[in-house]
Length: 354
Image (tube, rainbow, N blue to C red; front, side, top):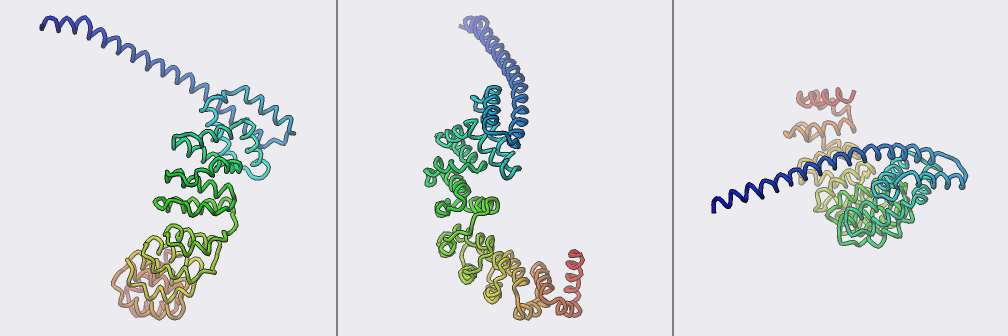
């Protein structure tokens, strides 16, 4: 039996192992050669596409010449391959982010003439989540409004990431149809809110009429979006509702509300900030004191002058000193003359301000 096993190893196992090892080496070498060949080929095509897309986007050729150039380019690159389509779309997105006006409009025309819009639509229809998100991104980044037709059906998609991306893209492409806002997934509220604010900055969308309803929502994410949107549009009509949110249970929302009070200069919030100050955690106390340094009146000055000398927490004392300096620098100097620690803080932040 032992002799049989040795023969088996000698005549079968070792040769098979050697054959497999040789096959693996051949495959690795072949893949390397294939990669090198394709790398050089793709590099040349990439450079060619960069030049062509930039030139044609900036050109003022008539319609016939434009179409001829597009047709010629399509015959010179492997546009039937997915990697080529992806590369062209990425180039168009980069160019569009730089160009404005007529040149920017040319980008969308090129996108359609190269049939890349159909490729993006096929990605949106793909069952794979990452492919679907890629297609949504193409429409959003290029500002391709006909893409609304393809993405709208996914606004209630069960996947939170897809739903969020669709809603943001829909908001941007529709230039302010805010029906998507109520469909944002709560668990990605911070990301969704940042994306919405980014859309507002880039697309210059008119103030939404629904903003008065958002501030009454029970959903912390909608409230967060409402507060940030009001700051963006400098909308002060719902000041009482904003100030009321200082008592909301969501800590992150309270911080946003304090920032909004400061940015919108809501003086009516002064008394509420003073009354809630010592009920809050240290980080929120610092935010409140900073806001009081912007909106505070004589009442805040009196409060700070009384609190600074007896304040033991260094961070809070320093923030109080800074806020009082904004409101009453002369009064702060008087405190500094009475307390060496306060004077050190005054010297410190005034030196940093120079």
